[in-house]
Length: 114
Length: 112
Image (cartoon, rainbow over all chains, first blue to last red; front, side, top):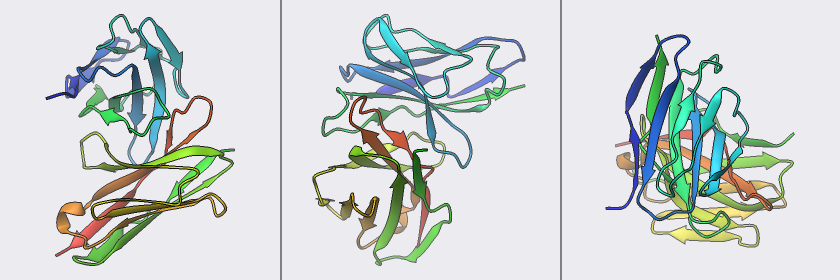
């Protein structure tokens, strides 16, 4: 079955640590995205990539970094510069934006600072 | 500034009735609008997309309307079932990047 796999499902970070969230898709989608969701909030765009080896900042990129070395993979690193990282992180993929298809989302990673 | 508004209060309805959820927006020239369903602790699931030049889209028990004059989309679920209980998100994309911006979502609770 095609889909997006996010891992881990739960992640705990100590103060000052960098952590990396994994996102892999086998849908052959060109575009991939990272969103952050806080309780009662809409999804906020962190980074997106429409082609391998290229990515763009979203609305809240500060304190995060990404790479897109392979079409299937778009890992997100939450750095120690992100002051309030506790949130639910969602990865998504799509064909080229503007088509008739929506995003396919992963099941999310819940990150907690301890 | 651009704003997408969905009712923050949960919508409670009885099984078998039609649920209607609203998405209002300001300062957008949307190219298209999407609706998603999200269950607790899960990622959103895409339901429907409607373009700026379309008035209505249907899919099984779902219907979406898009009024660019009123700057509003309505999402209807007919013959609602308890299994339809979830949070429903709307997302708008403008021309250019076509990257959608999401609303906060409205919780729907269908009572048996």
